Length: 384
Ligand SMILES: Cc1cc2nc3c(=O)[nH]c(=O)nc-3n(C[C@H](O)[C@H](O)[C@H](O)COP(=O)(O)OP(=O)(O)OC[C@H]3O[C@@H](n4cnc5c(N)ncnc54)[C@H](O)[C@@H]3O)c2cc1C
Image 1 (cartoon, rainbow, N blue to C red):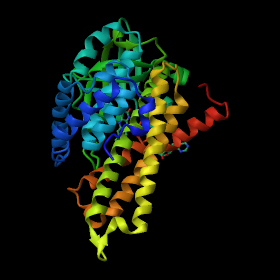
Image 2: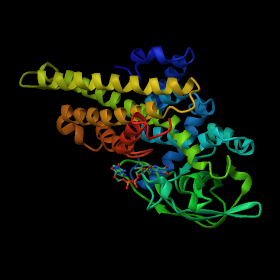
Image 3: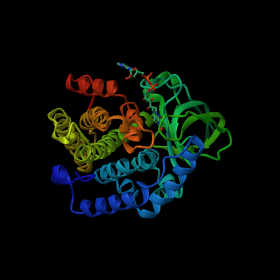
Image 4: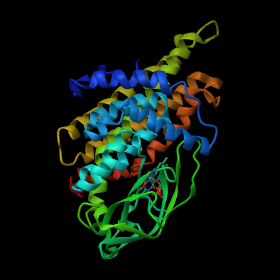
């Protein structure tokens, strides 16, 4: 199985996609797969910045600028299979830039789009707070209007690229009494006085993450994305488009894990024959491949709907993210089992996948939140 193998999802792709993914796959195999896993958080942060430039010069971020969601899925699938950190870099360029692209703020688009796509500016997306995770609308970061600016006060946690980003798309409340309808979104350049990096939050897999604070941070009103109070909707629209790409990253990690398990099952002999000849191992391999194919069909169906200019693809994206990330966790775990002791050696690619795949079930809305979104839409409690 090649990563990504276009066979099962070809019906969802456009004419331009096979050549694009072939180029990304070749680049990822040549330039990314051989790179060593960074030894610690500092090294991971430096590596993320290096990867940003590499990916940008290669043109990998182009589908983000084109709002080509199938292209984004193909890119993330290929990157995640070779380097989960490179995939995270791609994900954040999308999360930081897409609110700008979906809003009508031409000045912010002019300032940030080109450098983001070229890998010259690193983006970040600041929504989560220490006391507001799944319940995003309960955020307490405030943006108070003051003349031709807003003054931001508050704290954000679990922010990818915190401390190394060049700009943050920040969600803050402009009207605390209005709940989710009082949230607005702002572009805050990293060098804005009053924006402070509080420190890293270190994961078991390389991923630059951390906390930031806004202390009397003055942001021009011109940096607001869309109308005041429409930030929550902008955030949801962004996530609707990018959740399928989280599923795609999960598929890339799962496909790599399956590839490693297949290769091991062919070569490793116990009891006088290759592991692949034992039916208990065959059952695992068959289940891994079947679940991966089902996951990819959900992912590319959601991206295809989004590329078809559907205004909201909430249920499709939620199903894709939910199923693909859960399936990938099972697939990667099965791959570790097929590899035996070799699969838990820290230097083995499958061990790195095992540590990396876990977060995908949490960020951009946990599995439980996806269940609530899907059921809410089925029961008619939510507006599609
Ligand atoms: C690697 C990583 C990168 C991240 N990057 C970013 C980023 O760049 N920007 C950003 O803004 N955020 C980011 N996040 C934050 C992420 O979006 C949150 O962690 C996520 O939304 C969950 O919030 P929480 O961690 O506070 O968990 P909580 O909301 O406290 O949830 C804890 C558990 O309770 C469950 N739960 C919560 N509410 C319910 C409910 N109503 N019903 C049933 N179960 C429920 C959850 O599903 C979860 O299992 C990142 C997180 C990680 C792990």
